[in-house]
Image (tube, rainbow, N blue to C red; front, side):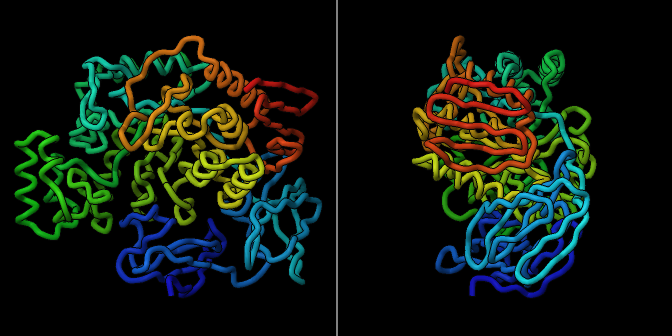
Length: 532
């Protein structure tokens, strides 16, 4: 058996969770993004369909509610948006909710997931021969970010004439970052900035010092100038934190909180890293590393969060940067135990926090409010029809807690994916229309406003930025951002349908109708059309 429910226990965030056994050692599945580190022996999961790693590959793990209808007035299953409340219900048949509208978001066996919109302070759920009464769920919190602009600092300009996009530094600085971020301020109010720390690589995810700004980028003076420029334009700064792993040259390695399988071999690797160029190391270090790493990348040793020193170190990094930024994006958030995140993030609880997760973040929402919406992204870029896009939207909404929706990062490309023009072709502006119309925080990856193409496999998706004055995609993004704020499209509740060749995203009192040529937004006696 791929997994088994050991027991159920009460939880103030989820209502109740299943303690699930799935093999020995690390538990790995779509809920961990298929990497090790977050869970050992067991994982606590709300009801749902998951995939877990097994000796034969991936197997389904069904966590069926012990009773129907399955609903609690808790943050995971409901939220008060102010004018209305939105709740989720798991049931094998359509439920009824007193004074509310019910929409099926995801159909499945043995249960489907329904959303209900209610106005009253108390409500009843009727289903499956039962009637249950509830109080309205908690009020959603705001964070003031409506859209982000994503920048990889080294690729903000090409100052070195770089050609090898896999390895070479192209020479972008934080001054270049400021210039292109300000040029995007008409369709984004926050800069999502990739790592800026001294590191071994141009992308800086192999961090050598978490408490410094790389001199290649201009150092602390350039960081202060960037902050001043953003503040002057009313833009916030969301900084990428890399805490799942460190760089091989980081002083913390190897005598800190790491999992070392061969100490002598590890010591040799460390000594080589201190004297050899990075490119030479990459060609030399092949096979199975003698220590735990990020995806078997020798240059990225993984921190062991079962060791208190790792938690304390990560928390010290958060404490250092919290006064300097407006929020954080947590790299490989799905590889760190939720209980560790609770302690690490405590100093930044009032900041906007976004975690990277390439699967279903269900067991992490208690600790991190929002995640990268890969569940939606994967369907958007491969969908061949509006009906499948509508289904993808509803599936994403069904699998995302209502209270997490304002924090979710929706996107159609980022630094780890193929460029949207390459994958979606002429549907790029339709993709932007969808993510700018849904609850959450849509992001535009630098160059996306220019219609730049490229593949992740050869890093052409990370080509240096080139200005594109007069870009029609940028014009569309400006109009979408303006409508997003004017019509309150960052809020929920929302659900999608396909009708007359259009994607319709519904809200109480507002709807957005998207076709191949335009988006029409109607609500509160107003209407706006935006060409796509």
